[in-house]
Length: 102
Image (tube, rainbow, N blue to C red; front, side, top):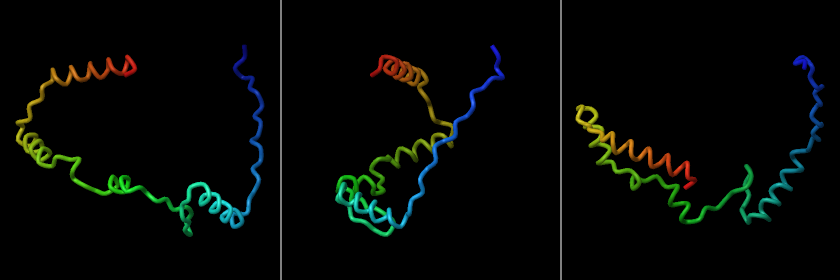
């Protein structure tokens, strides 16, 4: 067996060039027809549902800022106590669930 022998490389088939000015109109028409989205100069514009728009709004509801400050202070003062047994148990349970496919 020789490792020096290689198969000749086959070039990639050529790509047909296209007129971008002509295709812009076609693409915009297809996007509008398939998604009912309005178009703009930069392309398709997507309308978000009310729920999606609310999710995109910045908010502090998902972060407990008081708890974050409490943890920062405890770390800064060297008072943060970690229950390593609890962390290990959670890690083992998570690994078991992953291996079982759950």
